[in-house]
Length: 105
Image (tube, rainbow, N blue to C red; front, side, top):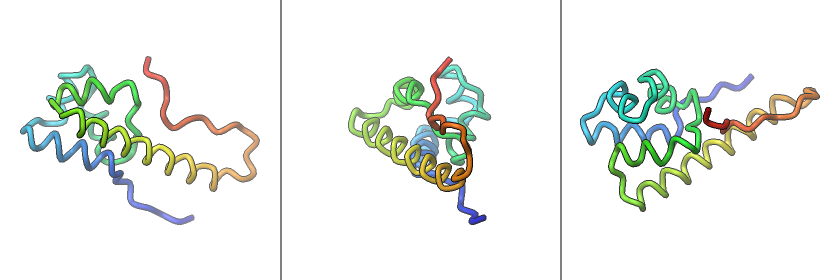
C-alpha cells in the first residue's frame, strides 16, 4: 500500500494563520469550542475540517473574507482527495463510502 504524507493544504493554511496570531492549538480550540487535539488533527491532515467549523474558526482567527474563502476551497480539495483515495482502496467493499466531511453534532 502506498504511503502518503498526512499534511494537507487546508491544515497547513490553518497552522500558518494560527501561528501568525500567536495562538496555541489549545487556545484556538478553546475559542471555538474544540479541543487542542482536534485542531492538531486538522493541521496535521489526520482529520478533514468539518465545514460547520470553518466559519467559527475563521472568525476566531479574524480571517479576511478572501482568506476564509481560500481556506474553504482548500478544505474542499483535501476532502475530495481523501474521498478519491478511500474509493481507490475500497474496490471490493460493498459498503457505501461515507463523506469525509461529517456533520457537526
